[in-house]
Length: 374
Image (cartoon, rainbow, N blue to C red; front, side, top):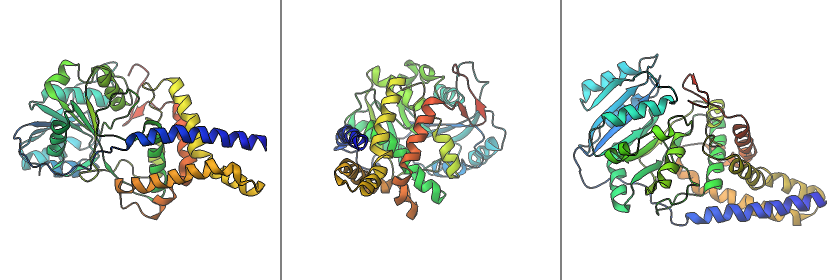
């Protein structure tokens, strides 16, 4: 029984830590809406693409419908082995702003995505550069809305959270649990520019000022990092940049994974922020999330079996917070189905994925494997 009381006390401490993080996000950014001011030629869009033939069409279809704010769309074909380049060429015939550029041979010490993004940055001609992943599907109004947000709030760089498409019942259950581990660790985004380096960003959608970003080295400071988005964001914040996190759920849809297994595998590459978070940060986060997410259901079971409801109080508080979080998160998912509401049952698996990622970082992506130097 003493062990159960100690576990309940640890849950109470974890609850205080998590609630302190979550309540920092009382001033949430409003969902992005289409902008109302045309700025012709203001944005260059850069897309790193490696073997994206099965994913890139929805993105290019949307970008072909963008307003004159978008000056050009540069797809850096990172030596794909499929028909990525020929698909982009089809869209070039429809919209001359869209063009494909054959990527250069990857430099030693660079991860492929950053190497492609750096090439696109050096080619961009507009004042702002919007980096989009090939598996995103934006509303044509997204670029202008992001630019308007940057100007309205005085952000130097804007990263945006999307709406997620989940393809299977299992993914609809697992993905929100994995996402919860991020929010429970770093808190939700706020309107105020990020000032702490203990934060995250989304490299699927990132708006930067072209000339200033080039002068800062572009992607070179994070060339070898597998979690390049968070590494870059923390680097820029340390350098005094004002970084804003926008809620792009109404204007940006992302379908990252085709199955539950793929979601489990690919989240392992980044969930523990290898190369960004220190070993101490990873350890503390894993312990806090074990008590805040993985343990509560089992403590309720233990309380019922021992007929001691006192030990269930911290667990019940944490479960109530988790359910409220699931409700708040719902607009960020595209028709997820009923298994979405079972996501709290997958919290233990999500915490396990975090621990595995911290212990055994995955440095593979798009058919390439990287050593610690890139």
